[in-house]
Image (tube, rainbow, N blue to C red; front, side, top):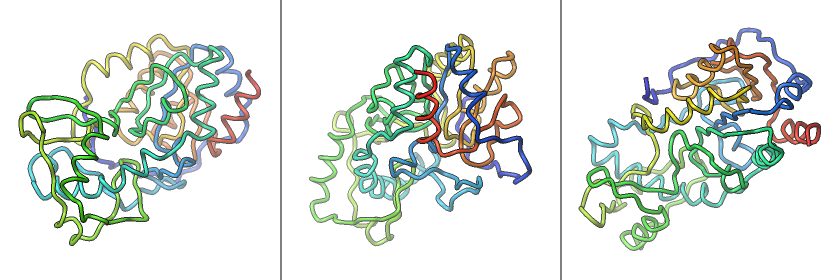
Amino acid sequence: MRTRPTLTWTATGAPLPRTSSLDEVADVVGRGQVVVLSGAGLSTESGIPDYRGAAGTLREHVPMTFGEFTSAPYARQRYWARSHVGWHTIAAAAPNDGHRAVTALHQAGLVTGVITQNVDGLHQAAGTPGVIDLHGNLDRVICLRCREQSPRVELDERLRVANPDFVATSDVIHPDGDVELADAAILEFTVVDCGSCGGVLKPDVVFFGENVPPGRVRECNDLVDAAAAVLVLGSSLTVMSGLRFVRRAAGRGVPVVIITLGETRGDPHATVRVDRPLGPALTELVNRLT
């Protein structure tokens, strides 16, 4: 299964074997050959909220689905109006201590690969090479007809030209770059099509209900199969697109270490579960190991 389904998992609130100690984590990561699987919780300290609160409760925001985007012109208008505002916040976000710690662990030779479910590009901005953007990246745009890819900054300029009087703002940003806007503002927004063929433009990210490209999945599987451990950072592992790699590792007897706040869907597969904010925890881990 390669789809990114709607967020349907609900945290149980059941007691879990959690710890705040990094002793076991340091022992596992210190052996090296670690693959990191990161989620939205890693970027919260950069000002980008995750889909769930610390208790695992799903926030009210419902992400755009692929079916809705491709079938309803108003849905595309709503998405691009809101994303046009929100993308500037995502683009301006800076890596935090957690991202920098992952880079440091990679430079130390302990982390051999990073798979991120995030679409914000902050791992790359922190200097980590070879990051696999499992769900794509908001800094790229793709045409659904001719498949031409282009930089988001080019689309941003075209949208500015097409909407010279559009001045909507929002104080609410979501991890997919979406914001909350009034219907009146959305209806005033003009969407632009592909400059090459006139097709529908879409951010080069995997919407919920859409397939993760098979080649990307194989690349991730290869990384996990070669790993001595999988380190999950800031993900509730709600969707199967990320959870499957945890299950794959656990099925091979590979240690799975999870550091995040709140319950995760992968907890039954974890060797150790640390419940701590990621920036301070990962900084401490780096100080121990490098």
